[in-house]
Length: 305
Ligand code: GLN
Image (tube, rainbow, N blue to C red):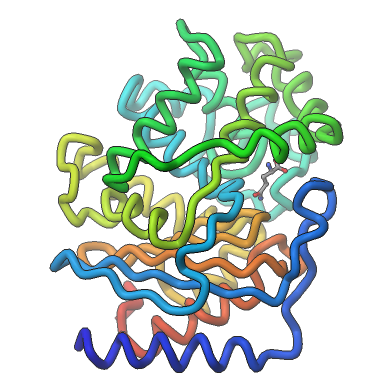
């Protein structure tokens, strides 16, 4: 299997590179706007400890919203079920940065992966901690899970987003007006922008994702129940209003980021990180989604059989 998979990944890298349509990079964060969309990397961490890679698997990229999975893991570890008093567990069917439902639903975001929900998670992370401590907690989790201390924040990306992050600022103020943000909105957005600006390679991200896949690399980091719940949320909400399409095509829990990263989980089997910075209309990696679809087809790993 491993040998076949290794060859498949090399073929996949070649096929994806032959693609004519890479999608568009996220230019609302100017620092990300200049990145060449025609890039691709993949890393697959298997249950037996092996790691298979192809393409630019060692190239660091901005993980953006993939960080929401790990921030959620930290907060669930800290306060558990109480989080659900402040954030829902339903797909939103709206864009990742939408404010629409927030008014109708009185400031309780639909789920922890849309921006409004992720801001509430970051607000929880900040309870009793400075922004620096909150960020250290997420980075510490990632480093332990990946078994790699060389994971850092790209400050230029964080500052670039902060200078243009009016929508997230609006969401934070709106949440605060409903009493669902305890810390000052600019503290929360500032911390959130830095969390999103964490840089990792596919190799590091696939290794960190083993804890979400239940591969027992760091068993004390995340309980079985929390791991299962995070996967359920990734399946139903991980690609925002493109989540149904992703489940249909790939059939695996996953989380995307506007840096073009994708963490895909085959529970109990593998943690897969894919990077290709060109995005589709939902803000998810275009070539990355295609690669995940082909990989799921080849391996038969879809949770739907
Ligand atoms: N930092 C980005 C934002 O808040 C993350 C969005 C994403 O990756 N989908 O807009």
